[in-house]
Image 1: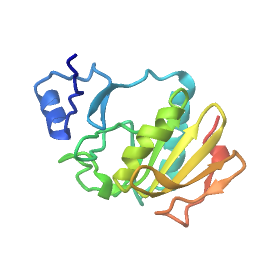
Image 2 (image 1 turned 90 degrees about the vertical axis):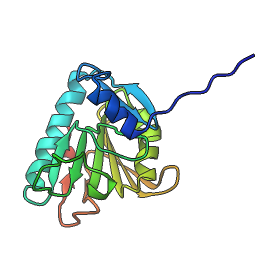
Image 3 (image 1 turned 90 degrees about the horizontal axis):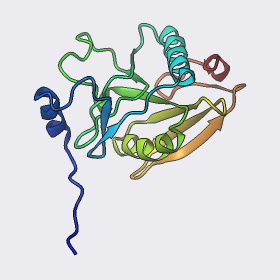
Length: 185
């Protein structure tokens, strides 16, 4: 019996597929650990919460960092996810020369409506392996925030689950206080 192996793609190959229009903007996909994954359609609670978190954090971090919403980040060699929100270093050219990389990222945020399991496993793994210091998962259904810190080889070594009445500060911005209640509608 013949066995087949899964063909994994690199970021460079993924970019060539985009340039050759094999993949287009109509293909709502992202590259995760070498696999081209179809992105889930957004339900209203996910979309509204993503917009609310973006607006709230953009106000708190104005002039301190850039916020990007649902745009790619490059995690070589084989991932280019599109997190819901990424807080990155200010770049005067606004990343026109390339997507932000792990060195540019202060904090990643995924909003989970139906994706909590994959956000806690595969997304956490690729973000931890890229050595991104902090990753939050906003759980729309349970109205809580998972705060993951201390990236390890396979996942984050520290995880806290915060309820709506909690406050927290991003590692990169300890003087900024985020009220979890302001995240949810």
